[in-house]
Image (cartoon, rainbow over all chains, first blue to last red):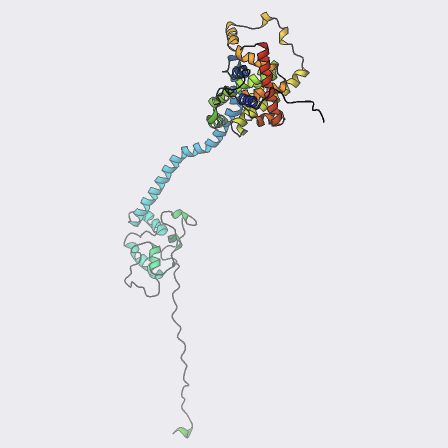
Length: 238
Length: 192
């Protein structure tokens, strides 16, 4: 029978182990714990007492290191991140105001154009760009001529239709099945969205506006010609 | 009913305090420092009595540099702190072995700065210093286990990882240390 060199401690018990475990967990020993553990609990409590002055002398140095390694880089990151945002916030108000002024101005100019209240040259420009009506009776004949050229050949559902009376060229063209001029397809508020500036539009009367090709009249098919009876010289017919 | 004998740590406030410190809040960092540094210094005064304050300062320097990258709860925070302290202590002991230093006890007593405030403070701190002195009489492993379990607040597994030993060995070392402490206290009649 082998003899073990070590034996269990006679004074060790599960209850003592539980008490020791409680002490290591930072708790008071149970009430039924041995009396010898009371001073041990006092020692451990002294280890956890409130800090003294000599244990707080390193705070200024630690704070200096914290400012150097954490605060300064954090502030640098924030300044880089906020720079474009602050720029936008500074310019945003001015940009927004300028945009609003431009939009309102363009809208007012467009309204004046449709009302025919613009000066002559501007009215012409408005007519060419946004399809505003031309002003004045002097332009009526020219307008009638251009409308006659651009009017569709098929019978119009509105024989008494007055060209350029109301509505935009797009609406006019769509009603009479003509192709909408390019400059009229873009919303009138943003004329600068045309390709090229100023938009190239044919002056009225110079080039015909693209329209549906006029249907060609049917070419009459030649009627079969009967042979022309020629006077018959033969005496058989008499 | 178990009654805690140590002061409360940050607890539920820890995540918010840590996040604020990582963002650059100096008051939050100060709170972390005040919560952990006393325990750190007491631990170092047992395992590295000749350079406890220097090692503590080096420890916080390393902690500050890695603060933004730290991720974990309060237990992980304390484990990281004391692991860093132990490594700084080992580095300091290696440097000290290569550099001759004048022991403090060779300096005449009248040359040591001592003010009335320091004397009063020494009396007030007698309980903690006596406790540290008692733990210094224990074997190194037993004293370290008791300090890391009780003062640092680490559990058995965390202490095992920090010291590179099994949880069972840590548990046995802790129990033996407390029994040894009880024997010293009962045999010497030491009062705190």
